[in-house]
Image (tube, rainbow, N blue to C red; front, side):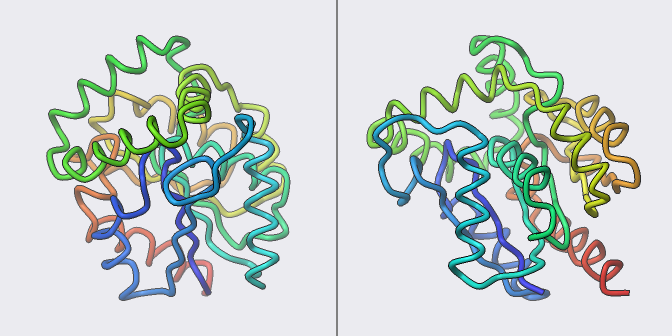
Length: 229
């Protein structure tokens, strides 16, 4: 079964190179940069998460991909969550990695302060992601600023509850040392999505899937094997 990884829309897909390399040893992995970020097309106006969810579903249809495992990280986790709620029939599994959208910081300043705390814990990720963030601010300015507001303000508990009612298999993969979306967010998602699986990387922070790619690939493989079984 294929795996579709959605890079966070504030950075670029190349930041996940180590993660994809590890995961590709166990599954077919496709990386989809969404419009308004990275090499995706420029947008005339910023998109909502619901519009991103429709784009994800349309992309899977165009690529003739059915029953995929969809991975969303940080901001793209919010888009993946909404896609799982709106189009659960297109997915075999949903993987949310330190996703925004539950217990948000409620201000861009609070979000930036939390990200600053995480940067010191993530030297590898920061080195790769920094240029991508700058690229998006320059070439996708309006959408990037809108996405920052979404990351700070979006409250998606209702969509999480819909995923739970759809009985979509869900993995919550979290870093215990995350300041941007603390572990409490994962615990709330687990409450809203009954039966979801929670993996906590005890040494990981917000972007641990890049900092600790082998660990993430192992967790993902076990999740997919359990589905197959």
